[in-house]
Length: 241
Length: 376
Ligand code: SF4
Image (cartoon, rainbow over all chains, first blue to last red):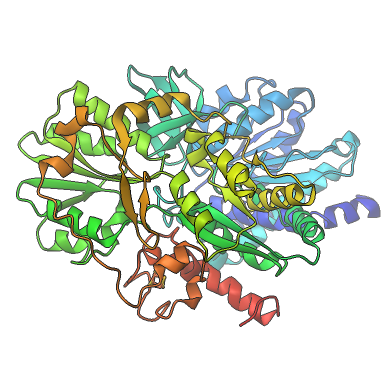
């Protein structure tokens, strides 16, 4: 069992845990699959997936979850064909694989996925993932000594707690999008290029596959990230969204 | 992109709010957010009410649907009701009231009015219906104008003659100037628009500090973006600087998108003047098609009444658009004017200040009044 200090650390993550578990419960309720990837510590990805696929107690739902085992730079290529719009991508750690992890996290919004990033040590910058569960005061040791395990056990249990409040499960960010006006909101949706064409490209966005015009951004290549407004790419996203 | 919870991290927000409080001290500051998307975020997340009371946000003219004058809506309806026309528009323009109702009502009367997501969809309809005239109702700032430009160039290159554009594109700089010269308003700085700036860059705003001595910070659309941009504005003021700065560096480049700007110059030219709802006529503030594209200019191809229509007497959209009054201070707000039955345009688009406040802001305000953080 974790030491008292660890409990205090987790206590400071209460609101992060609550909002992450609610977001995940909403996604599961709408039919999501959880994709887990932890290139440096694949055992954690497998552990998270195992927890979610078995019911927390008899009579509870088993939640669909899959761990993928891919080295640090191959995550995007393996996850892209697997992840459907509405799914959840949970990645662990970073370390030497940080570039590959960041690459997955910046592409996932174009796949329509909610992202969760778990780890310990220096906290990633704001916006690196939809939800960051980070043992920020800890060293990397937390990844090995059970504190990270405790964190995702809590996430799993709290996700099930959210299922006990079905009234909470209906609202989701996806509904919010419908209330905004593309013209006035100065919309810019993230898109990932699937196939360039002569005067445009077939791209993937959170809303699905669509053909867009790319005249304004010049040549595009498979995997490029773009911002799209009214069916037209307005800029290439270089450093990440 | 737009709804990343991590950009809504309450702990990070508290740190930024504390910094705002510290920088503001006892002095009062009034900043205008130019963009309707910012207004939406501010009301949706109750940002006004986490700020200290001496740091006020006022809402600018950045909702292009809101600034379309009634006469132009009547012109659109006249074109839509021309026999044989398929009239296409973004969804939010459908409910904008003109002097003779709105486009949805014209549709109910029998006009073929269709909602499209992109002007390219309108061009596609034209190609599919060579026997019909297809008109696209173009509205929006420089974020949207390039997609109209691309579409027009495609129509020209493919010689699609049954397609035309009723152009109402507006530009962001002239209304900023008009606001800066308005005697009604004392502002200490601006939150510059986000995605408009991906196209125009940050350079066009240099006149704001240079000529008017006000700082401007281009900002993203998440709550933390807006709070951080306010910190940047206050920091400039406290350090005695006055500059254009970019908070939204993850997307906006100083030079904008040169390719898009070139395309805009190829397709459009500035109108000598254009009427803005609530702001009156502003010179060189809107775009029209260049003479070379006359065959695709709906204003030249159709009989457009071009009659100026005064706003309803009860409507105070002008004052709201200039940030002189808050939405709830309009006499008809929430009574005669609601999103279901808008009197003014600010109540139509969800980014319009009145609709955003009606949908979200009033709840935050009621909570803030209850907590004693705002006056009733
Ligand atoms: S409440 Fe209606 S009439 Fe009044 S300012 Fe707002 S939109 Fe205009």
